[in-house]
Length: 310
Ligand SMILES: NC(=O)c1ccc[n+]([C@@H]2O[C@H](COP(=O)([O-])OP(=O)(O)OC[C@H]3O[C@@H](n4cnc5c(N)ncnc54)[C@H](O)[C@@H]3O)[C@@H](O)[C@H]2O)c1
Image (cartoon, rainbow, N blue to C red; front, side, top):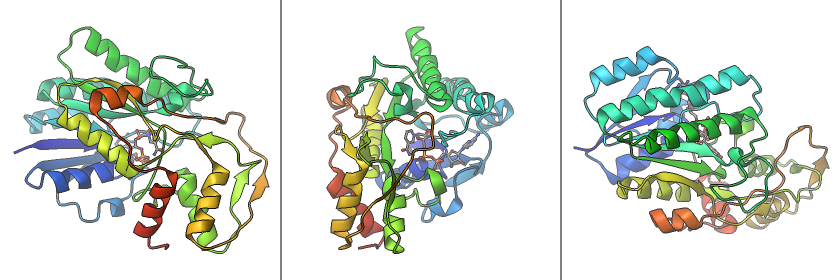
């Protein structure tokens, strides 16, 4: 019987991984760990596995897990402070970075492959397309916490610690399961909801900032490939591989929802704001066989249908 542990499994991406594993491996034992700080139980409707409420920062919690479970095939680590506007540096580093050491220890004990969520935030405002080994100048403590977590993993592997690990630097993920994230949900979701409720879409001036938007199905593809290619380790960008603007999103939504909203532009209140992100996905294509299937038009259409908006 295969055994999987998912940290942050009540969150957007973690819950989708839990449900996809359940679908692909119906006989597997699947354990979700979450402290429900930004996650929500409703993301796990339909989940038949086990759930343990706990805090990944807590060493005693990991000792408990290690004493209760003898093995896992893989640990999908997604728990994190995900609100990138949080400025409390100590808190961010404690959750997103320090916890990595407990997780590595546990993976070594269980001989489990670690498949974890890093972020495109590690690249800050450096030149796009972003490549895994350059431009590592995060602009906020969230991106910094993820970069140091990546370094901890790379150092562990370079010291020949018997660890297999894949880190995914997600770009802007959108799709089912993010509805409970409030203001940190994707702009695609927020704009769709504004327009559905009859409000004008609102964007920072002038909507031409570009992002690499990646649909949850492609993110799941990457995770399942990392599991299938069990011997492959490394850190990889996960995006669609093409930057698109916020104005593009509004145009696509208008077309799909048969509306004709004009955008209301307003000043960006943030001192730091990424203006252009685009993933270079050469490495993940070569090493994991990742092939994104959902461009922005296809992804938004699939998403709106799942949300029953169209
Ligand atoms: N969604 C994106 O666009 C995106 C982009 C880049 C990186 N990521 C990364 O992907 C991962 C998942 O993000 P998401 O969008 O699903 O966010 P999310 O906020 O929905 O999920 C994070 C989950 O972690 C849990 N959590 C937080 N602190 C915890 C703790 N101390 N102990 C146990 N559980 C804890 C939360 O309750 C939540 O369920 C995160 O690591 C995030 O940094 C996401």
